[in-house]
Every structure is written in C-alpha cells, then in structure tokens.
Length: 451
Ligand SMILES: Cc1ncc(COP(=O)(O)O)c(C=O)c1O
Image (tube, rainbow, N blue to C red; front, side):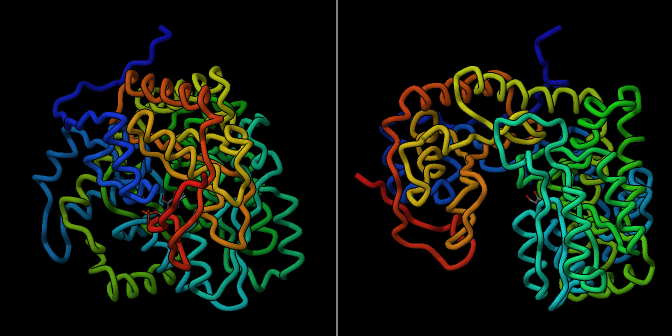
C-alpha cells in the first residue's frame, strides 16, 4: 500500500482555533514578525520544534498515574534504568530535566579552558555548554552537508580526515572527548552511518579518546541505517541501536525527542569514576540521583517512551511521513535539504527568496510568509539564529514535525501553504532587526519589514 497510515488511533483531541489571514496579519505585527513571540493559541500547525511536543500514548499516561514519587529510590527510576540499560547497554543512567542539563554536567567535568571538542555538528545548546566551560567547539561535517540539493544517504556523517587533521593540529591532550550527534540536527536532521561511527571509534581508540554521542534522535538514526546502509536491511532496530551505543563511552540525550516525552533527559556514562562525579553535580543543581529534577511520573512516561520509540511500524511511519512532505515541496519547486532528514524538513530560504540579501534575513521572511498564508509556525535557522559575525553555511527554515501529533491531511495542508508561498515568493520582503539581545537573539528579537 502506498498510503502512509498513522499506526495509532486518536483517543484524545486537542482542538486548535482556525484563524483568518486578516487576523494572522495583526497577530504577526503584534509579535514583531517573530513567531517565538506569538501565543500558542494563535498557531494552527505548530512546526516550531519536535522537542517536547510529542503526543504521549495511553500507556505513557497510565505510567503518569503509576509514578512513584519517593524522593530516593523511586521504583519509576529503577524501571527507567532497566529500560535504558536493555536498550543501550549503559548501566550508569542519570535522569536530568532535559538534554542541556546533561551537557552542562558533562562539560563541567571534561571541558575547560584550552580544550577542544570535535563534533560532526554541535547543536546550539551543546556548543553553548562547551563554550561556557571555556573550551572550543569544532564542527566537522562532511562537505555534502552544506549543499541542500546534493543527495547523500548519510549527510550527517563526520568528516574523518578533518577529525584526524584536528587531532594533529590541536594535540590529543587538548581533546577531552570526540562527540557525534545522531541524527545531525544542525545539518538537517541527517543520519550518521554505522560505518562512519566505527571509523570515528577507530580514531578515538588510536589516540585513547572517549567517544560521546549526542543521541537525542538515536531511533530515527537507527531506522535510516536499517533502510540505507548495506547489510542492515534485516537487522532489528533494537540491535542497530545497541550497536551504535556499544561504540560510545557516554551519551547525552534529550528525551524530549526520541524519548517521546514532554520533558526529561539522560546522561549515560561508562566510567564509574565519571559517573560518581556527575552524580555529585546532579545533586548540586538538578536533584537526587534517582529523579534528577523530574517527578517520578515523568520517569515512568520516559521509560515507556523509550520502549515505544523502537517499534518498527512507528519508525517506518515517522520517517515516511516527513519524507512525504519533502517530496511534495520538491515537486512544487521548493528546494529543501535533500534527502529529508528524520524529524524535519529544512527549506532553503536563500533559494526561495533570492531577491532578499542575507543581511535582510530571507529565512525570517519565509517564516512570516508561512504564518500569514497558513497559520503555520516554523523556525529560522540562518543568519538570525547564528547571530552577528557568525555567517551560517545556509539560510534555512525548519519545519519540525512533532511526533504522533499531526495527520497526513495536516501535512497536505502544510505542503499547500508552501506551494502558495513559492508561487508568491516575489512578494516576500527583507527584514530589519529593531531590537535584539546579545546572545540567542532569535528567541526575542523584534523585526520590521523593509519597504
Ligand atoms: C541534537 C540536540 N542536542 C541537544 C539538544 C538539547 O536538548 P534540550 O532542548 O532537551 O535541552 C537538542 C534540542 O533540540 C538537540 O536537537
């Protein structure tokens, strides 16, 4: 059958308000042309992020009721620990309130002035935590990653030669760990092959370096390996997941993605010594080691989420539905990062609005256009987000697809809005920033349209 069906029935619905174009024009102006400043109730299809926006299953909600709220030794923690250990092979499991808390603890322990952390591509919070520790974050994506139209099955891979060159240049003593982000969010939610992960591991072994995964979307990455990497067609997703984690010495995870929960994270460590130190830091700022800043009910929902995420019917539907939207956009002439990644479609805004110079933020203009046409909220990932003096490789607009939330007809609606935007692209206008903070300006900056 060609039709993708959602492998679930809907038990509870969350209505949204249908707005008119006139209403949206006023809302956009009131929000200073920044969708982060629009109230959720004024958004029809919210594709701002796939993080913490999943719909939980009936079993997860049942887990919410079962949550054991003991301060210490909660049964919900032990269930989570068992599920994660079975899935990843890591016995040392620390819950955190979200991914960046795991990053903060890790880099407080292994980062510091003069250190250099190579990664295929750092996500912005990972980079911020590396830099906050005084270390330098270095991105080493493969060449194909910066060309939206160049197809590559594993566009998220790390450039192996560049990793060798970086180690030779900065010296092995400066590198506390090598990181690999699966999937590579910054480069378009693109997967990393097991072949590439093994090559990184070999280099780490040669130099005695630990390998840490930023594994927020490990299950989506595993599905791409199964469907694209030779020899894995018949390997169960759980085995692929295990093979990926077996190559690592640690992992930071935002459970708000492939944990299928609205809040939560994990820090996984192989070294008992590092785990002991991380536990002490966790207690300092997050909470006791068996809850890490979360409620027992959150731990239950997370344990169940990590069980459901590796179901192959779910993953097949998930990846196919993102690809379906990507195919529709390409057919309409909208250039996207091709092939589509696992959790989002990234529109090449520089291609869609070539008449808008980069310093007039073509991505922000496309984001506003999509809101005007369809009440769809998306996110600029280009010069606005990168900040002054850090020109990004691409001007992108991300349509992140929340897990298990929208149906195929919602995707058809999004595609129709993108088609209309493409047809009327000459009407898009450049933007000017009227007010912005020094860091992470995309969240609160105010804009106006240039006449
Ligand atoms: C690859 C990657 N790493 C880390 C994070 C940070 O996770 P959190 O938002 O839970 O702090 C994210 C969140 O989007 C991410 O995509």
